[in-house]
Length: 282
Image 1 (spheres, helix red, strand yellow):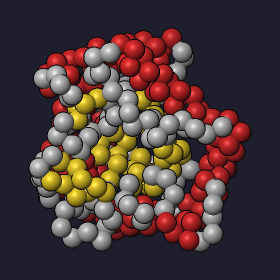
Image 2: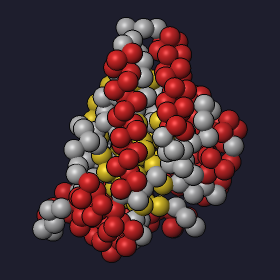
Image 3: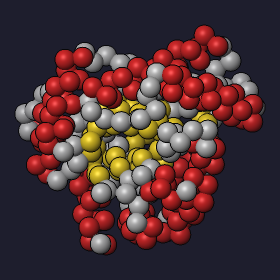
Image 4: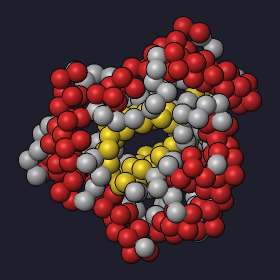
């Protein structure tokens, strides 16, 4: 089944009087949403009891939780000491995901920094091989670790780079953020054919089974010369991208992804809009 849901809690969640993320699974399920992404972007700062409470509610209401590992992960950092911290951020995110009864860990792979892009990508591959060994050693290979396509030009994470990373281990699954890809290519995603090229590339390189269950982030994003500037809402009529042509491609290939909306404050509402758009096609 395709799952739709928000990243974090939307403004409407709080406007309706809810204060705790433990209320989110029930609130989402009552609206027909079945996915929820919990962000550790600024650090893994949730206690075991709270994570277990949210996880139990998610299981009760049929909401699948994914987690986003800290934003400051960088597997192209020249320092081995800093790389060690990045390994731990991913592994600790996985431990928390399990407390949520979730099995998807989304992470940003790396940035170019002062290296050439080629050298940064090669170092990232080396480090992701080490991470894969650590995942196996810690018996975490039943989970899915999902490097994400990125929106800024100096970040590692175009489609081809993420697919190459995912070839390292079967438990690496791509997070395709179409808003990010649109931003880093200055608005290239307009037609179903534009989306189909990306999806077909993933299918051809990772196989249909893995491509079918890819993790998707979607939002409209303002961009400039350097790529991503900020996340917008579906009310935006300037930057895009639009979800309708992607929905056509998902239906065409019979994909079964988790689709997380990262709109700025309207993520639950816009997730519902995506679900309605897809259901209208079906």
